[in-house]
Length: 129
Image (cartoon, rainbow, N blue to C red; front, side):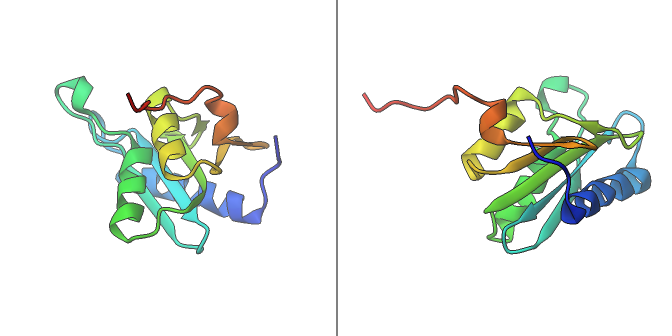
């Protein structure tokens, strides 16, 4: 576990600013921001759907934006709710974050940053048969 540095605090503020601008009842309740090792920042809101199963988490949208830009070496990621509170990634997002950057740092609270490995100690993997 590590404390937030100034870059982490800026990333949290990026996510908070986005959800403050884009919160929309029944559509966008969570915002995420990630910073790649090259220093690029990507932020996104989650995409709600009438069929809840097809909703897309903000972390996944942000990772998709980074992938589209060709920069998926993710250093740090954070998600916040509509009130600006930091929220941990769901299980699927933990898998996705780990798939794209096994050493990614995940901000869990104002004073807590952990490796995605700590959040996913027994990561799923496809075994060749």
